[in-house]
Length: 66
Image (cartoon, rainbow, N blue to C red; front, side, top):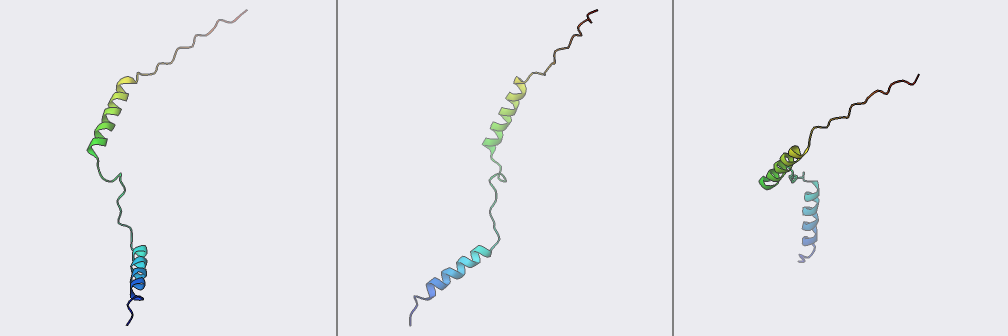
């Protein structure tokens, strides 16, 4: 009795099942990262401290030439 034909058949069945199974992966952004969150908050705080309110220069009307 030959068993060599069973191994490829079993591998093919498992590969087919794996392809049809729904994905269970979690995107990396779904898991919180304390180090990244802390750096992001520091960066936002620093950018808020540096940014000054923008003041537009006033336009002065030129007198008409007569």
